Length: 378
Image (cartoon, rainbow, N blue to C red; front, side, top):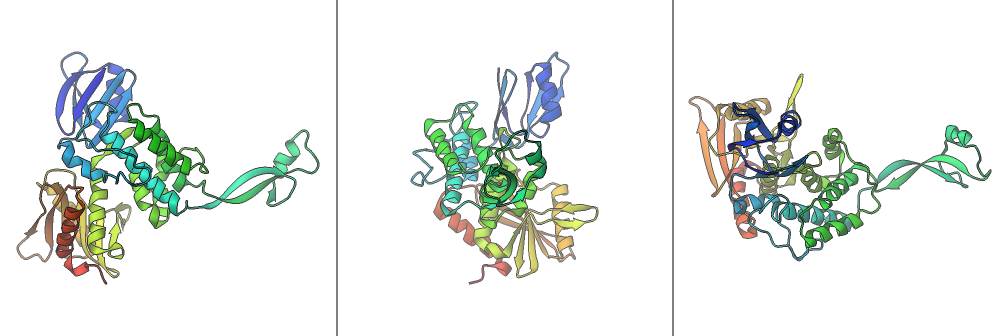
């Protein structure tokens, strides 16, 4: 049974009771499930994800509400001439669960980022291993050594700290690529690109990375791993599901970084407000002083009161006079809202979705003008 859901649109469809129960219990972040008065028919509303999910005999495909030609640029198509890119050509819409388009694009981008990382060298760290060797080069593992019923007298069980690429920052991308490589429906070129990327990470172990540890891995990883780990973060819970909100945050971050410079931008830096922490998406700084704060919203550019309250709360906590909400759009547009007698301005920014390099440069220039107090220092 195949079921297609479009983002933010409610449809009534028949579902096995067991599948509806699993969706409501484990995948409420993907789809809202409401029973109807008809037997085994449910009102289903997809949230902000695209991809597909298989539960028992049911395959559910999640499609974006916008045309694929507009959503595709969020995923930063790779140059087909680069290593790992193959001869992939982006299509303008998935034709079915697992079909070319979203999955091939996602897999190609992941493979290209893994190749880029391997080309400059994988990050290494000290990993404790248990070895049995004639030469003592670590700490003797006395319990293991004494429990072994028979051992050559010249061999020693020992714990050795090896400098190895088998660290969580490398295991996470390898696990994501392995999961995608097992996905049915990928084109042959995409599958070969993933296999070459996995070969470049051959020294990395196959242990999975728990979802609960991923934020800590991203925070402790080297700065040049940021884009690769952000991309891996789009692969949600081992399923082929991509958060459009998260993808738009990455897209907006890339444009802001190009506009104001790496050192003038803080990405998802928490503001600690005991006993909770608030995390704006982007904080533009001039030196050590915050200048403006922005939050990306994957929705229509019609701000709700809650969104305005959120932006104003960030501005109050950071003591800045400029805060903004960033929305997707067809054209670049900047509107400013001000309350009478208030020094705080709320900016509503629409960022066009495009993969044209020339247009992206023009957008970055206009964005730099909008953030003029923190423009990149020469």
